[in-house]
Length: 636
Image 1 (tube, one colour):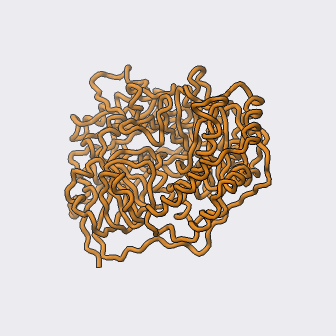
Image 2 (image 1 turned 45 degrees about the horizontal axis):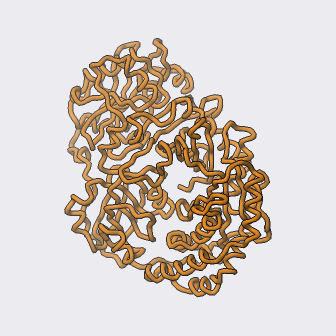
Image 3 (image 1 turned 180 degrees about the vertical axis):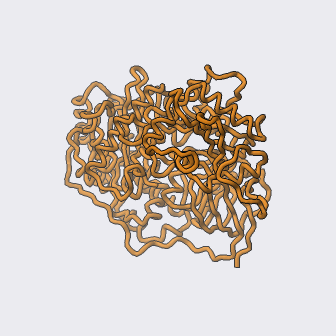
């Protein structure tokens, strides 16, 4: 028996009369909200939640405006072919009708309704190069035929439309993506469904010890790491590349953001109750459920990872091969691929790069005396033990690793390697395990990176190395491996070291697939000024979020080259992107070339457009040179 209470966000336009008359495939006016809703669907680009879209075509040959019924036509081209007699190919249609030419026949756009701000916008597609005269003509034509003429705005959603703004009439009101993003109340992060007990968390430090794997958390603040839970609702919006978003995607649990969470009494009234939690594109639901919650069960066949402790010397990045991942870890092996790619593609990897193989961690771990403690720990049901007990055991293991001196010969060899590789003395020591950056398990944010400086008392290299090694047994990393049933006895920690970037101009993360539209070209980029964290930002800080497209001659797909589809701007840069249009296009071209080189030698069961690599990049503060410091498969 399930007693259902509709908890999600109620979408106004879903309550239409059942007796509504059939709608024609094209009409010249939208006179009521019901008219709009009857023609609408979710936009092809699902960048925001709670958006409804109607396609519009202005035929310049007849000067007739058409509002298209989405139930009949998904694409503008289909409508123009079937209803307006366009007889040429799709390629010709795109070339002619997304251009800046004054002779183009069809002016194409979407009218989007944003429930969160109760406003309508006219929006061009990301590849559309419509000129200012045509854009004014289209906007005014739409305005004359809709009931919301005083509530219609031009959306400045692409770099091209932004560039046209000074040439447009001041009578055309506009909205920025920033205004849409800032005024949303709901954001789907991981669209799944699960059962659990509702737990309201207002003080993570006090309450975290009592969290169970069957809990659905309603969180006021985002903790540094999440235990195993059944679902999460947060109040702060996240980027699709944040640790919260990736956590939901990797664990396949429902996760969303709702800014009004702690002012919604009927949600708070569910505390302690068992519910079914469902996250959808435009809403989420917490339905009371009469089910018995059970702790997590370990699958019968644990995942055994590959490792090899025979490599007993440091190895410069240029000599690492992909097959060495079993000796140096996946991060170091993937970094070595990037080093190889720099010979064919115009970007750099951080200098003075080398790897510390698994064997040195193994020697240090044995010397520290943790092996008996690990053996005892792994005999217990840690998935369902009290978190405090697991944390206590792991803390002791980390303490023993960190108090044991690093082998003197290893430190001497590291000093020689740093001196041989260049002039950089301040290095970043980064985890490179066999339990991260792999297909099916990204391990994003689970392990530690630390800075160490040669001959420094404040940031000694040995302390940085020990902290990275010890992070293999952090509570978050351990429990995530438990959830994926990875055999801890086969886990090993290597280290990738390279020069640090204390003064970067821009840092960012890029995904080489379009997260907002399946089977479609486009790369999702989050970028920010300086070293402000993109995936785990300071509370209240927002980064640039946009979709960019490689040039046609680079990609061979579509005609979106040079387009920048803006989702929101950095809160630190006064309403401007932190990278120039030229830098963004160059980044998109570089990402496309890297993706092509990678897929030439790696099998994937996904289509080319849907396959993604997850890359971290930086622009140098002095030269704005593009550096790419990490690459891994994007697991979604």
